[in-house]
Image (tube, rainbow, N blue to C red; front, side, top):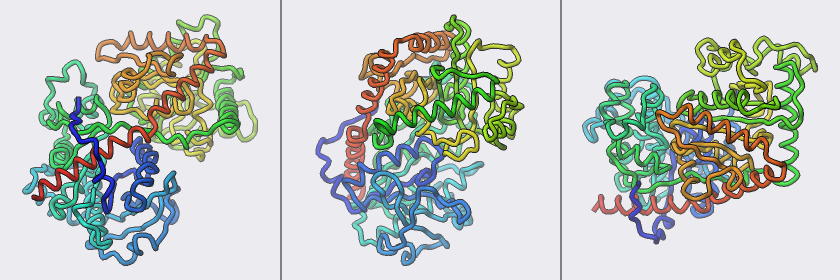
Length: 559
């Protein structure tokens, strides 16, 4: 359990000159952190106004512009043109097109690559960060993080802010080098480091090792050497130790940090949700109906049959991590549902909506959609063809099930693309498609928080999740455990109960499928009510506590 020994008065946390937050996912939707930042922004903006500045990577071009960045060159006293930046760094300043419209600074950071070795040496001498055997995305992450730190320091000077009243917040190991750089070069600034999932914990699970059965026996440093994760783990652990306040998003991850990073977070900052993202009334009904019509049409063309309007549509989504996100358990539970719990042979549509290495839309399906044809696609479980169909875990499992003739009347379809509304097949954005689902299943094995089940209940779609997700633990601690009572069923996942989980998920889905329409409506209303308790207006208070701790610790450190 994370420590929460902080004062209730957070007045000084709200009386600051600048609040920076740096992440790869500022104006750059690549994962769940984008949802964290974009949904909490309005609450922070209401308190800090334009003292709140998000810093993200400028990975865009004239040909591929950011869909959410609105450039405003005169913001921050025209810093985009007047700020004196070293190392040929450049920035663009604007607004993030989300509720609150906070100021955003996008940084062109590639000129930092030639300075990395010197900075790695400095960070080894000052803090013991071992970057010697770094590989993959380590250099790019550090180049962006350092560039962001330099921009934050220069803006502090340019805007004549008091460094002792500035907070710099860094998300994930990918920005940890920026935190260390600020501490080394402008130590008056209060720093916060948030891990949304430890790199070594994710790697342990992703490599098929049992995290929970041997949890107390794991040593993070040892596992980093075994899994060739030394540089990332070293950076993350050091940033956690050196930050003026270290936070994480759930009690389950706080426990993981204590065991694997040897640092216990001082505050747990759960991830909330912004209800303005959810349509209401007639808009919701229109999106539900249009989404269902599109999905059932696609499924019908792929399977060569007509699906009834009342077909149960069950979905899962998120990052494409076959074991960690429970995609394996989703598939096997749906097969169990179709073969054991569907005696009347009702049609059930199971959607796996996770991005993969897309090559192109499924050709025959695309032709049929555009011409109302009825030719069966060359692959009847893939809406888009992949570059690596022979090695993709979801494809391999679905192909095996097709060969074995498994599943009864369950039709499993893999939608392997970002649902941005422009994928060429579905052409409906994820949040607009979510209301079309009847039930979602997110049976995660490793999930620090779990935005996907929270998003689901926010859109009045009941969900099944696990106690290995921070969201699942939060629900289990605060609500009755059933779809009918709170819209969420939390199952207990362990290293050794996969078959029991399959059975429990299938039976829960079957029970929900047979509920009268009135009871299903009440379950959807209960799901929405549960999500309201996770509104940012409740969870944002934990951030103010973290800000207060960081300011206090930075002040005492400087003394």
